[in-house]
Length: 254
Ligand SMILES: [Zn+2]
Image (tube, rainbow, N blue to C red):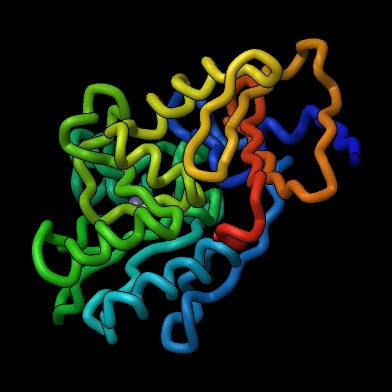
């Protein structure tokens, strides 16, 4: 049995952080482990694990170079510049629809990637990523590797971002799969997880057990058995989500 101390800053770290206009990224706390997409796209950076899983999916669907990365990690400066330039070029209405306000962009987390169908002229803000062919194959397969299509048309009233069929967010497996099966966007999923308070209620999915711990409550440390593996991610709002794999022999890591 081991004990893990839950630190306050954990709320703002991890694959499940919700970053939007209401919940800006805590840039000073966030730590990064960024990698270039590959040797052809060295300027497009992505979180190390997200990049690994992304390439796994691209290989599985045999995308070759039919799907290309358009935009990955952005620093605060880059997001500010993009926002300013878009206001200048596209006007305020368009910009508010498609470009997140500085510190409210998922691209600053390193966990989001815009993908485009390879073609001669790729629109940087709105690349084409149709619900057909190789792009749709990616959409379906990526759910098994931790990705979600983040801004769907039917969730516009919740995300307040217009449908972006090209924008994928890494949240990690099994969360991507649960969200897809229950048709939750990240805002809804983060809310839903609050029902599963550690010690009271558990969300079970295959060999995973998922719990929520609200920070500032009594629980300051959690204990795990030696054969258990767990990940802790903040929700960037008020607590952490603990994802435990209880039987390692069934599935490793994923
Ligand atoms: Zn994007």
